[in-house]
Each structure stands twice: as structure tokens, then as C-alpha cells.
Image (cartoon, rainbow, N blue to C red):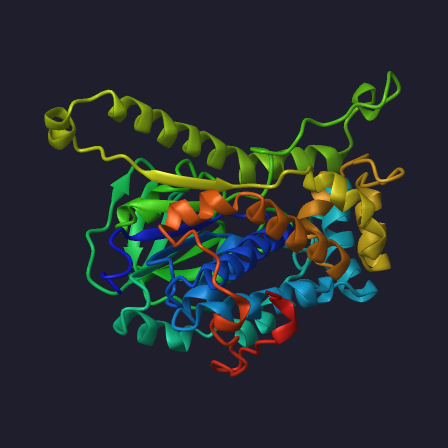
Length: 430
């Protein structure tokens, strides 16, 4: 890495959250903008990048173009701004009936059709289109070059093994590292590929499990957010001394507004509401707990004298946490109409409803599946706005100059291509 510019290794942790991961793209967009405004070095500011679930996809896309950070960010912005559900899962009537309707039928009438051995739907939705999208936007063939050239130290992608019960972090690094082993948490040196991304983003019940080779044997994997008790840990193990953590909800968002005595709280929770609650537990809660733990350790270490701190195996960790300032399920409720009719009908069948923009009847579930441009664009803008509102904190975190460079003296915006990654110049205004 560029040690003269980056004395401390900076990590980037991108968490899971399905379509909510569009928020992360907005944060990265704002960081790229701030970097250019203050004239900070052009190289990739993140030596270690760790991602989980949809965050792993963003992480890999950035890592594979670490030599052109601005270009990489513009590429993921372009992808998320033009998203449609059919790029991620089968959203046509036949595809929904073949997977979702069949799956729900098995739940309700399994006793009657169990003898049909061929009737074994694996998930609510068929995410085969995602594999095609990943081939276009994540260029793993460039990753060894990024590592060898010092543009990146490590990329980590996490998955949860249905076969062993372990939470596995697959790591591709510039230099050999000592794999860690904790209770139900292990690290495995790997040559990363699209299968790891498909596995890490396989939301339980919603998308099917993925077979991944691990240490000479095949195992079935699901979403890396499951059983992820320490989301920040991989970046720390891989050498990050300060870490930018981008969440997907809860930590900074306002409390849910209640709507009177006849609110949905008085009703028996629908399947969709329970599912949304479960996914929020999987995707959001572990990060909040891990951040609190790191902050508590920092406060404890601050009480030690220099000699005691030198003897301690624990070191202070510089954390910057950026998370949504608004409730993403409420935003999703305003965009449910954007979903294709077959998907909307399927979700309505399990209790997803919208009432004047309120998160009624399981809109939290929809917030993870709403891969539609009106929703993802609003999340991108929210992520950018939340980050720009903390501009001084961002500059201090990276150690960048505080003085704004005149526009005419700033770096020329890249208009070339890296691999097949396009860089539309209108996505990152000065």
C-alpha cells in the first residue's frame, strides 16, 4: 500500500441487507466526492475490504477496481441507480409461480403432496438472474492484480455453512495470513469468485443455498449475516487499524411512529411481518452489538496508562459508523408499487401491505427485496446526504486536508473504462 499517504490501514465493512445495500453506495459516493473536494490522494483509501451478503457484492466490485476508486464507485452507483428486481430474481409470473407459489403451497399443503418427490422448491424466489448480473459487474479476474500491485491488502467475504454450522470468512490477501478460529467462526484463505458472492447473499428461505468448495470438500452455504456475531472482526484480523462501518438501519434511524389504538400492533402479526422482523434480526442486530462492544473496549483502554496499554493484547480501534438516519422500511412502504405485479401479489399473500406510506403489514420484508430504481435511488441519496452531513468527521477519520480545493484545480473526473466497468460522468457531481 501507499504507506507514505496511509500510515494506518483503513478497513471498510459493508454489511448485509438485500436491497438496503443501496444505502452503502450513497455513502461511498459521498466519500469519493469529499476526497476530490479536499484534494486527498487518489488511491483507494481502504486497504482491507470486508463484505457480507449484498454488502459483499458492493465490497467485491470496489475491490476488483481498487486501482481506480472513483471509477469503481461510479460503477456501483450506476448499477444500483438502474436496478430492477428481474436483475436479481425471477420476477415474471411463471418464475414467481414456479418458485414462490410452489414454496408457499408446500408450507400449507405439504402433507398432501409430500409424496411428490419432484416437488422440492428450494426458496421463495429464484435468484438465477443475479448470477448473470455478477458476471457483468464484478470482475474477479482483476483481483490478483489489485493485490499484487498494492492497491489492496485483503478482500473478505462471509458465508454461513448449512453443512457445518460455521460462520466462514473467505479471504483473498496480498500476503499470507494466519487464519483465525473462534467459536463457530473460522477464516479460510481462498481464491474468491462469484460463487462466494451468491452464497454470501443467499437470504434464508428467500434465495436458495449455494454449494461452495471449502478446504477440498463441498458445503452448502447461505447468507453470511446469519450467525455473524462479530461483523467487524474480519477487518480487524486482516490488519485494519481504523474501520469505516456502513450499516443498513436501526442504529441512527428514528423510532417507529405508532398510529393509534387500531395500529397493526394490536393485530396478530402476519407472516410477512414476522419474516421482516427475523431478517432485521439477522442483518442489523449483530452489527449494532459489535459496534457497542468495540466502543466499550475503546473506553476501557482509554483508562489504562501507557505501560499497561503496551502490555495489553487489545488495541484501540478507530471506528466511524454511518447508518441510515431514516427508517428504510418506511421508505420501502412508499415504493411497494414499484415491484413487478407477480412479486407484489406474492408478497401480499404473506401480508405485505402499504397504507399511505406507513410501514404497514410487513413492509420491512419488502425493504430487503425491493430491487427497483425508485427505491434504490432514494437510498443512494439518503446515504450520500447522511455522509455529507458528517463531512468533518469523514475528513478527520481519513486524515485528509480540511481545506477545499478550488473546482478548477481538482482532479479530472475519469471517463475511461476499467474492464467493462462504465463510469458515467453525471453520477458523481462536484
